[in-house]
Length: 126
Image (cartoon, rainbow, N blue to C red; front, side, top):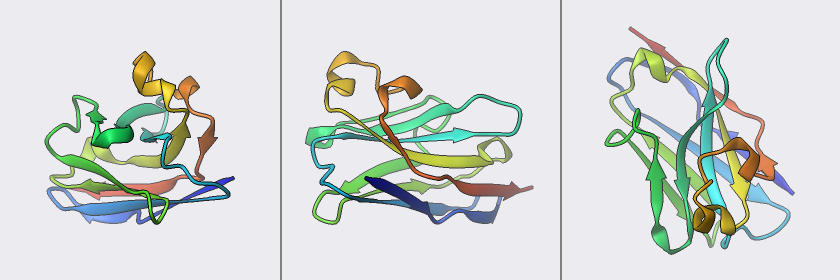
């Protein structure tokens, strides 16, 4: 089982970027798919999650600017980021958790996720 994140890069403040995560090894259509990020010197934090049934959750810091989407046929999950700010700069990780993470309400915790991608760097210039 493998998650491969891509799409990171350098973007000016106010710009947009689209991250993608390709899952392989099995189907993840029933899983919770999430995005987390970690800035230097900080803990890894929740960004967004996609549950089954097109239910999505976002951290307050990205709500209204980021959109998570998934294509179960392609086993991919994307994170469209717009209105990027300097504080959005971080390494972004995609992750997969069992379906129960949404039912239990712990989709925003690191420990709920079993599989993690390698991370992709997002740098925002001011």
